[in-house]
Image (tube, rainbow, N blue to C red):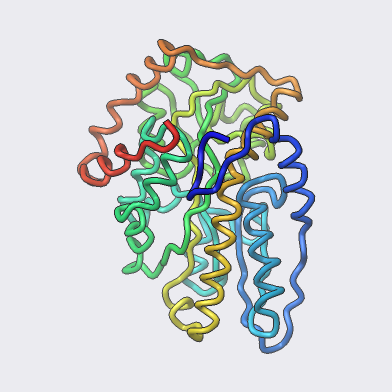
Length: 343
Ligand code: SIN
Protein backbone atom coordinates (compact mmCIF):
# COMPACT_ATOMS: atom_id res chain seq x y z
CA UNK A 1 0.00 0.00 0.00
CA UNK A 2 1.60 3.28 -1.02
CA UNK A 3 -0.90 5.95 -1.98
CA UNK A 4 -4.16 7.03 -0.44
CA UNK A 5 -7.31 8.73 -1.65
CA UNK A 6 -8.99 10.58 1.19
CA UNK A 7 -7.09 8.42 3.62
CA UNK A 8 -8.33 5.19 2.07
CA UNK A 9 -5.45 2.83 1.21
CA UNK A 10 -5.00 1.86 -2.42
CA UNK A 11 -4.04 -1.80 -2.72
CA UNK A 12 -0.89 -3.09 -4.35
CA UNK A 13 -0.76 -4.25 -7.95
CA UNK A 14 -0.63 -7.90 -6.76
CA UNK A 15 -4.07 -7.57 -5.22
CA UNK A 16 -5.43 -5.91 -8.32
CA UNK A 17 -6.95 -8.77 -10.25
CA UNK A 18 -8.69 -10.32 -7.25
CA UNK A 19 -9.94 -6.99 -6.01
CA UNK A 20 -11.38 -5.97 -9.35
CA UNK A 21 -13.00 -9.33 -10.01
CA UNK A 22 -14.72 -9.13 -6.64
CA UNK A 23 -15.61 -5.52 -7.29
CA UNK A 24 -17.24 -6.34 -10.60
CA UNK A 25 -19.08 -9.34 -9.20
CA UNK A 26 -20.60 -7.11 -6.51
CA UNK A 27 -21.95 -4.76 -9.13
CA UNK A 28 -24.55 -6.82 -10.93
CA UNK A 29 -27.12 -4.39 -12.36
CA UNK A 30 -30.27 -3.96 -10.30
CA UNK A 31 -33.09 -2.55 -12.37
CA UNK A 32 -35.37 -0.08 -10.73
CA UNK A 33 -39.05 -0.71 -10.20
CA UNK A 34 -40.57 2.69 -9.59
CA UNK A 35 -43.74 2.75 -7.54
CA UNK A 36 -46.45 5.40 -7.80
CA UNK A 37 -45.60 8.37 -5.60
CA UNK A 38 -41.83 7.87 -5.77
CA UNK A 39 -39.71 10.68 -7.22
CA UNK A 40 -38.17 9.42 -10.44
CA UNK A 41 -34.44 10.12 -10.83
CA UNK A 42 -33.22 9.32 -14.34
CA UNK A 43 -29.41 9.07 -14.48
CA UNK A 44 -27.96 9.18 -17.98
CA UNK A 45 -24.39 8.33 -18.98
CA UNK A 46 -22.46 7.15 -22.00
CA UNK A 47 -20.03 4.46 -20.88
CA UNK A 48 -20.25 0.73 -20.19
CA UNK A 49 -22.37 -0.20 -17.17
CA UNK A 50 -19.91 -2.72 -15.68
CA UNK A 51 -16.12 -2.98 -15.60
CA UNK A 52 -15.95 0.81 -15.92
CA UNK A 53 -15.51 3.37 -13.10
CA UNK A 54 -18.52 5.51 -14.05
CA UNK A 55 -20.77 2.60 -14.92
CA UNK A 56 -19.97 0.86 -11.61
CA UNK A 57 -20.48 4.05 -9.58
CA UNK A 58 -23.83 4.74 -11.25
CA UNK A 59 -24.98 1.16 -10.56
CA UNK A 60 -24.04 1.38 -6.89
CA UNK A 61 -25.83 4.72 -6.62
CA UNK A 62 -28.93 3.19 -8.21
CA UNK A 63 -28.85 0.20 -5.88
CA UNK A 64 -28.44 2.27 -2.74
CA UNK A 65 -31.06 4.89 -3.66
CA UNK A 66 -33.58 2.19 -4.51
CA UNK A 67 -32.93 0.28 -1.28
CA UNK A 68 -32.54 3.16 1.15
CA UNK A 69 -35.05 5.62 -0.31
CA UNK A 70 -37.67 3.02 -1.24
CA UNK A 71 -41.12 4.56 -1.24
CA UNK A 72 -39.73 8.09 -1.58
CA UNK A 73 -37.41 8.02 -4.62
CA UNK A 74 -36.51 5.69 -7.44
CA UNK A 75 -33.42 5.81 -9.68
CA UNK A 76 -33.17 4.50 -13.22
CA UNK A 77 -29.67 4.43 -14.74
CA UNK A 78 -29.35 4.59 -18.53
CA UNK A 79 -25.79 3.66 -19.64
CA UNK A 80 -24.17 3.58 -23.11
CA UNK A 81 -25.90 6.75 -24.40
CA UNK A 82 -29.25 4.88 -24.28
CA UNK A 83 -31.08 8.02 -23.15
CA UNK A 84 -28.83 10.91 -24.24
CA UNK A 85 -25.29 11.33 -25.50
CA UNK A 86 -23.02 13.87 -23.85
CA UNK A 87 -23.77 16.55 -26.43
CA UNK A 88 -27.49 16.39 -25.63
CA UNK A 89 -27.72 15.54 -21.95
CA UNK A 90 -27.19 19.00 -20.43
CA UNK A 91 -29.80 20.80 -22.56
CA UNK A 92 -32.13 17.85 -21.83
CA UNK A 93 -31.49 18.26 -18.10
CA UNK A 94 -32.40 21.94 -18.31
CA UNK A 95 -35.63 20.92 -20.08
CA UNK A 96 -36.43 18.49 -17.23
CA UNK A 97 -36.04 15.32 -19.32
CA UNK A 98 -33.32 13.78 -17.12
CA UNK A 99 -32.44 14.47 -13.49
CA UNK A 100 -28.79 13.42 -13.11
CA UNK A 101 -25.77 12.74 -15.33
CA UNK A 102 -22.01 12.52 -15.01
CA UNK A 103 -20.51 14.00 -18.18
CA UNK A 104 -16.79 14.17 -18.66
CA UNK A 105 -15.40 17.48 -17.39
CA UNK A 106 -14.43 18.26 -20.98
CA UNK A 107 -18.11 18.57 -21.93
CA UNK A 108 -18.92 21.71 -19.89
CA UNK A 109 -17.08 24.28 -22.04
CA UNK A 110 -20.35 25.79 -23.31
CA UNK A 111 -21.37 26.58 -19.71
CA UNK A 112 -18.16 27.64 -17.97
CA UNK A 113 -14.62 28.40 -19.13
CA UNK A 114 -13.23 27.48 -15.70
CA UNK A 115 -13.84 23.74 -15.95
CA UNK A 116 -11.56 23.78 -19.00
CA UNK A 117 -8.68 23.76 -16.52
CA UNK A 118 -9.07 19.97 -16.36
CA UNK A 119 -8.29 19.73 -20.10
CA UNK A 120 -4.88 21.39 -19.94
CA UNK A 121 -2.12 18.99 -21.02
CA UNK A 122 0.26 17.44 -18.49
CA UNK A 123 -1.33 19.45 -15.68
CA UNK A 124 -1.84 16.55 -13.28
CA UNK A 125 0.78 13.88 -12.60
CA UNK A 126 -1.80 11.31 -11.59
CA UNK A 127 -5.40 10.89 -10.43
CA UNK A 128 -4.40 11.60 -6.82
CA UNK A 129 -3.31 15.08 -7.87
CA UNK A 130 -6.69 15.50 -9.57
CA UNK A 131 -8.40 14.44 -6.33
CA UNK A 132 -6.30 16.83 -4.26
CA UNK A 133 -7.19 19.76 -6.51
CA UNK A 134 -10.88 18.84 -6.58
CA UNK A 135 -10.92 18.73 -2.78
CA UNK A 136 -9.29 22.18 -2.48
CA UNK A 137 -11.42 25.32 -2.05
CA UNK A 138 -10.77 26.27 -5.69
CA UNK A 139 -11.82 22.80 -6.85
CA UNK A 140 -14.98 22.70 -4.73
CA UNK A 141 -16.04 26.14 -5.97
CA UNK A 142 -16.05 24.77 -9.53
CA UNK A 143 -19.11 22.69 -8.66
CA UNK A 144 -21.12 25.91 -8.47
CA UNK A 145 -19.58 27.59 -11.51
CA UNK A 146 -22.66 26.87 -13.69
CA UNK A 147 -25.44 27.76 -11.25
CA UNK A 148 -26.35 30.87 -13.26
CA UNK A 149 -26.92 28.57 -16.25
CA UNK A 150 -29.16 26.31 -14.17
CA UNK A 151 -26.67 23.46 -13.53
CA UNK A 152 -25.26 22.34 -10.20
CA UNK A 153 -22.26 20.05 -9.77
CA UNK A 154 -22.70 17.60 -6.89
CA UNK A 155 -19.59 15.36 -6.79
CA UNK A 156 -16.52 14.61 -8.90
CA UNK A 157 -16.13 11.03 -10.11
CA UNK A 158 -12.84 9.59 -11.35
CA UNK A 159 -11.96 7.67 -14.47
CA UNK A 160 -8.23 8.06 -15.14
CA UNK A 161 -5.31 9.41 -17.15
CA UNK A 162 -5.60 9.66 -20.93
CA UNK A 163 -3.51 7.74 -23.45
CA UNK A 164 -3.10 8.42 -27.16
CA UNK A 165 -3.67 5.98 -30.02
CA UNK A 166 -3.71 6.09 -33.81
CA UNK A 167 -3.56 3.83 -36.83
CA UNK A 168 0.21 4.44 -36.94
CA UNK A 169 2.79 4.23 -34.13
CA UNK A 170 2.97 7.38 -31.98
CA UNK A 171 6.30 7.92 -30.23
CA UNK A 172 7.39 11.41 -31.23
CA UNK A 173 4.91 14.32 -31.36
CA UNK A 174 5.76 14.66 -35.07
CA UNK A 175 4.10 11.26 -35.58
CA UNK A 176 0.73 12.96 -35.00
CA UNK A 177 1.35 15.57 -37.69
CA UNK A 178 -1.37 15.49 -40.34
CA UNK A 179 -3.48 12.85 -38.54
CA UNK A 180 -7.19 13.25 -37.77
CA UNK A 181 -8.02 12.74 -34.08
CA UNK A 182 -11.41 12.38 -32.47
CA UNK A 183 -11.68 14.74 -29.49
CA UNK A 184 -14.38 15.58 -26.99
CA UNK A 185 -16.13 18.87 -27.74
CA UNK A 186 -13.59 21.07 -25.93
CA UNK A 187 -11.66 24.06 -27.28
CA UNK A 188 -8.61 23.08 -25.18
CA UNK A 189 -8.58 19.52 -26.49
CA UNK A 190 -8.93 20.77 -30.06
CA UNK A 191 -6.03 23.18 -29.52
CA UNK A 192 -3.87 20.29 -28.29
CA UNK A 193 -4.33 18.35 -31.51
CA UNK A 194 -3.67 21.50 -33.53
CA UNK A 195 -0.46 22.09 -31.56
CA UNK A 196 0.68 18.65 -32.75
CA UNK A 197 -0.11 19.53 -36.37
CA UNK A 198 -3.13 17.22 -36.37
CA UNK A 199 -6.76 17.81 -37.26
CA UNK A 200 -9.28 17.60 -34.36
CA UNK A 201 -12.71 16.06 -34.96
CA UNK A 202 -15.19 16.60 -32.09
CA UNK A 203 -17.73 13.78 -31.94
CA UNK A 204 -19.90 11.98 -29.42
CA UNK A 205 -18.33 9.10 -27.50
CA UNK A 206 -20.87 6.67 -28.96
CA UNK A 207 -19.58 7.38 -32.50
CA UNK A 208 -15.85 6.91 -31.85
CA UNK A 209 -15.42 3.17 -32.46
CA UNK A 210 -17.10 3.29 -35.88
CA UNK A 211 -15.11 6.40 -36.87
CA UNK A 212 -11.84 4.69 -35.94
CA UNK A 213 -12.79 1.44 -37.64
CA UNK A 214 -13.89 3.13 -40.88
CA UNK A 215 -10.85 5.40 -40.94
CA UNK A 216 -12.94 8.58 -40.75
CA UNK A 217 -10.50 9.52 -38.01
CA UNK A 218 -6.99 8.15 -37.48
CA UNK A 219 -6.72 8.34 -33.72
CA UNK A 220 -8.16 9.28 -30.36
CA UNK A 221 -7.22 10.02 -26.73
CA UNK A 222 -8.86 8.26 -23.81
CA UNK A 223 -8.36 6.34 -20.58
CA UNK A 224 -7.57 2.63 -20.28
CA UNK A 225 -11.09 1.97 -19.01
CA UNK A 226 -12.69 3.76 -21.97
CA UNK A 227 -10.29 2.25 -24.50
CA UNK A 228 -10.86 -1.30 -23.26
CA UNK A 229 -14.63 -1.18 -22.76
CA UNK A 230 -15.18 0.46 -26.18
CA UNK A 231 -12.64 -1.76 -27.96
CA UNK A 232 -10.71 1.19 -29.43
CA UNK A 233 -7.44 -0.79 -29.18
CA UNK A 234 -8.81 -3.39 -31.61
CA UNK A 235 -8.93 -0.85 -34.45
CA UNK A 236 -5.70 1.05 -33.76
CA UNK A 237 -2.01 0.36 -34.37
CA UNK A 238 -1.31 0.53 -30.64
CA UNK A 239 -1.71 2.77 -27.61
CA UNK A 240 0.99 5.14 -26.38
CA UNK A 241 0.98 5.64 -22.62
CA UNK A 242 1.24 9.43 -22.64
CA UNK A 243 -0.75 10.15 -19.45
CA UNK A 244 -1.09 13.62 -20.99
CA UNK A 245 -4.53 14.47 -19.61
CA UNK A 246 -7.49 13.15 -17.66
CA UNK A 247 -11.04 11.96 -18.09
CA UNK A 248 -12.93 12.77 -14.92
CA UNK A 249 -16.58 13.48 -14.32
CA UNK A 250 -18.91 15.93 -12.61
CA UNK A 251 -22.14 14.44 -11.33
CA UNK A 252 -24.54 17.19 -12.24
CA UNK A 253 -28.18 18.07 -11.79
CA UNK A 254 -30.42 21.02 -12.55
CA UNK A 255 -30.65 23.73 -9.92
CA UNK A 256 -34.41 23.90 -10.39
CA UNK A 257 -34.95 20.16 -9.82
CA UNK A 258 -32.50 19.95 -6.91
CA UNK A 259 -33.95 22.94 -5.08
CA UNK A 260 -37.47 21.67 -5.70
CA UNK A 261 -36.81 18.45 -3.75
CA UNK A 262 -38.09 18.16 -0.22
CA UNK A 263 -35.17 18.82 2.18
CA UNK A 264 -35.12 15.24 3.57
CA UNK A 265 -35.01 13.75 0.06
CA UNK A 266 -32.25 16.13 -1.02
CA UNK A 267 -30.18 15.44 2.11
CA UNK A 268 -30.50 11.66 1.87
CA UNK A 269 -29.69 11.65 -1.85
CA UNK A 270 -26.66 13.93 -1.31
CA UNK A 271 -25.38 11.70 1.51
CA UNK A 272 -25.74 8.49 -0.50
CA UNK A 273 -24.03 10.15 -3.48
CA UNK A 274 -21.16 11.31 -1.26
CA UNK A 275 -20.65 7.81 0.16
CA UNK A 276 -20.81 6.20 -3.29
CA UNK A 277 -18.29 8.77 -4.55
CA UNK A 278 -15.82 7.91 -1.77
CA UNK A 279 -16.31 4.20 -2.24
CA UNK A 280 -16.00 4.08 -6.02
CA UNK A 281 -13.40 6.79 -6.65
CA UNK A 282 -10.74 4.78 -4.87
CA UNK A 283 -11.29 1.90 -7.29
CA UNK A 284 -10.98 3.94 -10.50
CA UNK A 285 -7.17 3.64 -10.65
CA UNK A 286 -7.19 -0.13 -10.08
CA UNK A 287 -9.93 -0.61 -12.64
CA UNK A 288 -7.92 1.43 -15.16
CA UNK A 289 -4.84 -0.73 -14.53
CA UNK A 290 -6.91 -3.88 -14.92
CA UNK A 291 -8.31 -2.59 -18.22
CA UNK A 292 -4.76 -1.77 -19.39
CA UNK A 293 -3.76 -5.38 -18.66
CA UNK A 294 -6.79 -6.56 -20.65
CA UNK A 295 -5.83 -4.34 -23.60
CA UNK A 296 -2.35 -5.91 -23.57
CA UNK A 297 -3.75 -9.43 -23.16
CA UNK A 298 -5.85 -8.91 -26.29
CA UNK A 299 -2.62 -8.39 -28.23
CA UNK A 300 -2.52 -4.60 -28.54
CA UNK A 301 0.88 -2.89 -28.58
CA UNK A 302 1.38 -0.54 -25.64
CA UNK A 303 4.18 1.98 -26.16
CA UNK A 304 5.86 3.38 -23.05
CA UNK A 305 7.67 6.71 -23.46
CA UNK A 306 11.13 7.23 -21.95
CA UNK A 307 11.83 10.53 -20.17
CA UNK A 308 13.17 12.29 -23.30
CA UNK A 309 10.25 11.12 -25.42
CA UNK A 310 7.75 12.27 -22.79
CA UNK A 311 9.46 15.65 -22.53
CA UNK A 312 9.04 16.14 -26.29
CA UNK A 313 5.23 15.73 -25.90
CA UNK A 314 5.22 18.11 -22.90
CA UNK A 315 7.06 20.75 -24.96
CA UNK A 316 4.89 20.27 -28.04
CA UNK A 317 1.70 20.84 -26.01
CA UNK A 318 3.01 23.65 -23.77
CA UNK A 319 1.79 26.51 -26.06
CA UNK A 320 -1.82 25.52 -25.25
CA UNK A 321 -1.39 27.10 -21.81
CA UNK A 322 -0.77 30.54 -23.35
CA UNK A 323 -3.88 30.20 -25.50
CA UNK A 324 -6.22 29.55 -22.53
CA UNK A 325 -4.56 31.15 -19.47
CA UNK A 326 -6.70 34.31 -19.50
CA UNK A 327 -9.94 32.48 -20.24
CA UNK A 328 -9.49 29.85 -17.51
CA UNK A 329 -7.73 32.10 -15.02
CA UNK A 330 -4.05 32.03 -14.05
CA UNK A 331 -4.89 31.57 -10.34
CA UNK A 332 -7.02 28.51 -11.02
CA UNK A 333 -4.29 26.96 -13.17
CA UNK A 334 -1.75 27.62 -10.42
CA UNK A 335 -4.02 26.01 -7.82
CA UNK A 336 -4.28 22.91 -10.01
CA UNK A 337 -0.52 22.85 -10.60
CA UNK A 338 0.06 23.00 -6.84
CA UNK A 339 -1.70 19.65 -6.34
CA UNK A 340 1.01 17.03 -5.96
CA UNK A 341 -1.06 13.90 -5.55
CA UNK A 342 0.93 10.72 -5.20
CA UNK A 343 4.30 12.06 -6.40
C1 SIN B 1 -16.91 9.39 -20.88
O1 SIN B 1 -15.99 8.79 -20.34
O2 SIN B 1 -17.95 9.64 -20.32
C2 SIN B 1 -16.77 9.86 -22.30
C3 SIN B 1 -15.42 10.37 -22.61
C4 SIN B 1 -15.30 10.73 -24.09
O3 SIN B 1 -16.24 11.30 -24.67
O4 SIN B 1 -14.23 10.47 -24.64
